[in-house]
Amino acid sequence: MSSIPVGSEFTSVRESKGLEINQVSQLLKIKPQKIIALEQDLYEGCALNLYDIGYINSYATLLNIDPQVIQNKLSLRGFKIQHTTSAPKKQNRKKHYYKIIALVLLFIAIYYIDKSPASYSYTEPSQHIAKPFGYSEN
Image (tube, rainbow, N blue to C red; front, side):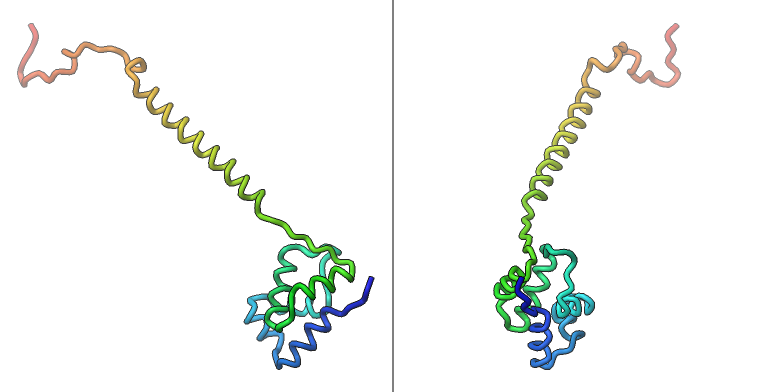
């Protein structure tokens, strides 16, 4: 493994531009602790996840460093760059849509079955006709 100090490069370029860690944090909307971790090459594990890559790319772009060069240096140091996609999430959304559609159709079917004439008991229409006041059937 090559020992290319990516974090030191971030620090030296940031300092040469006269930027403080808090300024970088505000510009990138990244916590100062994360900026410090990037400058000290403190990454969790050997695999860099999508968030880490995003932070590195944003920081490199802010400092006018080519993000691909930084990623290549990290790869040479033995870090695995994990490029994940959001395709599985979209598939899960489709499954949820199908479930929702099935439930809506089920409720509609239950509603119409409940309203069908077969579910009512038959009564004579004369029992429901209003009688005038004082009328009696003797």
